[in-house]
Image (cartoon, rainbow, N blue to C red):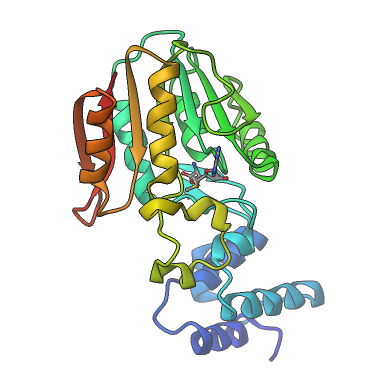
Length: 272
Ligand SMILES: C[S@@+](CC[C@H](N)C(=O)[O-])C[C@H]1O[C@@H](n2cnc3c(N)ncnc32)[C@H](O)[C@@H]1O
């Protein structure tokens, strides 16, 4: 029957052999179908509207649209964030920033910036860990700020403040305790870009070997950070040494790196 779960499972196995079970995830998110029903009730019947939606899901998935954009949802640090093609899909390695943040002792009334906030995943996760601090989420693009606002409301992050701006230009000198950023750092000719064509290029690519935006953030952080303020930046797997050199040129201290799940240096931490 062309309206049964069994029929759609068969179709799915043809388009997505060996990949993660996105069909189950889709049906679960859209229609609340639990795993017991998914695995045991092959005769489950869908109505006309649902059939159209499932067919549309197959079409998008076959044409390479990331699952997170199809369902408008991405997991990050135990929360579900709204996402669409206006923002980068949060990545697991970025969660390492939150792990590191949790290991720190922060005082009350800390001012923290999430520079290039996108979906707001970093800033909101941190704001919800320490609700006596203020976390500013800044992004150059209003379209990103619109998504971050949806997530701020969805996840009740009242101490997360959003603003449109060019990196740290909106902030006063010596006013910030911590700058955190996952900026664009991929080079323009990186071969991985062909697999990322649904995500905004403005979230991914930076000139000067992928280091232009990181350079600006390091320079501007020197202005806005208070004495002993911290800078935390996610970067490409082969950029750690270059970034360390830039940080040293600006006299940052206590520089060290955190490795990702593939054992690549991924997050650099420095102090003013
Ligand atoms: C790699 S994405 C990170 C998004 C999100 N923080 C995350 O970790 O998933 C980089 C973000 O920086 C923003 N961005 C790019 N250039 C910027 C600039 N000059 N000033 C502020 N934000 C910028 C992009 O719009 C994008 O949202």
